[in-house]
Length: 206
Image 1: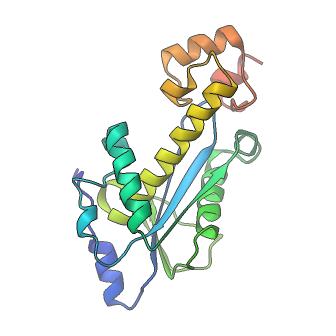
Image 2: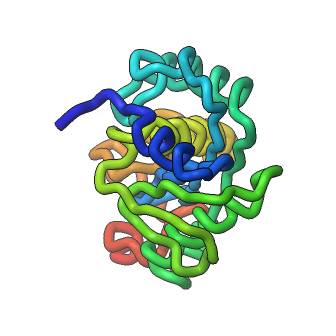
């Protein structure tokens, strides 16, 4: 599978007359702790500085590369925003509905209303805008890759802050994902207020 995102979707849509094309992606479906965070990014038509060597699916970048890409995206984008869903909301709504809600909140946070959405894998029936869901969009589409970077960096920063608030779990290292060390500390300390009660490893401890 290609790992270098391109601007082909955005170019095609611009030729059709669209001007504010937002890429949308989320991070944090799998962790046992912390929020689910979505990013929405509207890029400039000229994206030479945001080539695939700089902006890719956030999972394919090192933390330092993500921070560098984040700085470039947030400085050069026409508009960008994040939307978050709390652990309690995830427990109440379920992960799929929470995923869509985070994306809707990110779109609502944009300073410019988009006229087309490019979304990683999903479609958002809650949003009355033309849209396209792209399977593996975070690897293939530059706007979606940019959204994944913005979301990932934002969420990672939050988890580092939460590590100070809830010490002992190692949140700054694993960012809430179910690593063996996280599971060990969770079993020892019990769930914190930001752990997702509906996820099996946490639920089994309650």
